[in-house]
Image (cartoon, rainbow, N blue to C red; front, side, top):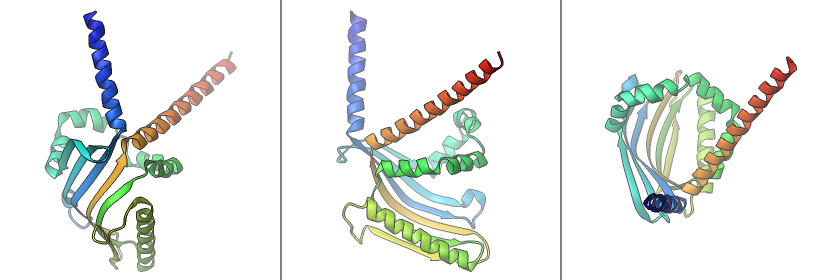
Length: 220
């Protein structure tokens, strides 16, 4: 009987936590991110601070996590990360192939997340293989950002949204970024996207298993 009540209490707390998550928003604040591709490998990404918050009804913060450069270095150097995470991560080429093969689903998922931008302060400088490509890319990036802001900003305030996209006219790839921003999205939308990808993966697995079974039967 005692075990039954303990199970009920555990289920109750899990249900409450689930309801709180469903009613919460995830807010990510990126503070003083500075990337410079012209620096040495370990110095390309110099300064950054991520404040990750879970906010009930987008008002009450009930969980807050700070991630800075020192914490990331500690995690990367930890045995748990090297043994459990790095060994399971594919090569960068495989990641690029995955993005290319699933780009439609990825773009659809980003739209489904319904990301809201609360603040943006961006300075981006870019150089590509030649002047024409650089100028063309700058125009495309500026257009994409303006369209994204138009669809993700509830109430526009010029003091909160500022971005400068400028070219560097050199015959080599260069990327420099300074970024401060706050983005907000609902946990429910994240759960929905995770469910869609999990369901798709399950369907793909079932199709492969079915094909294998058909192939096996054909040998009889």
